[in-house]
Image (tube, rainbow, N blue to C red; front, side, top):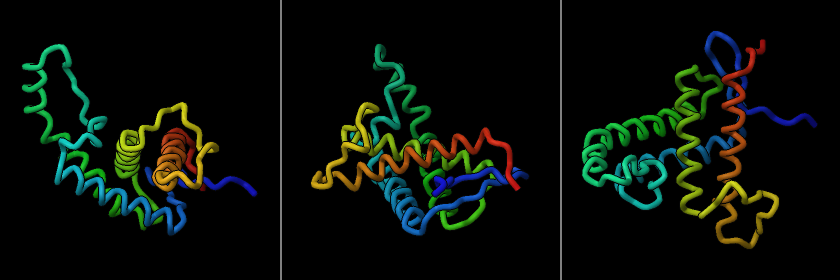
Length: 160
């Protein structure tokens, strides 16, 4: 059985989405939850990796920087999450939507890795079914697999 490719370049700046219904539902739910989390509590520790400190050696400059850009960063991320949630049921997305997918899926992985204290050294094969975080960890690795295919689709020649 040949491995499934969830995102494929189709030409004319379009990309085909081949996801299972359960995967689509998971992505839609996760994107909606993340948009709500950012709207409701953008300062929560779970989002720390989405909004890292830019100027750690200068608290005054950091505060000014955050005041200038934080609101726009929050708005941009919410729009990306909403874009993915709105387009996940479709069969085709354009290059701009694919870019939103890439950023939103990466952001979701960052939030999950913070919540679960996952590092790049952790291995999906070591996942313990009795781990209370098993589902969240599986989601993290699924999103990594999807992100890998999104990145590959941006570089591939369109298929007919």
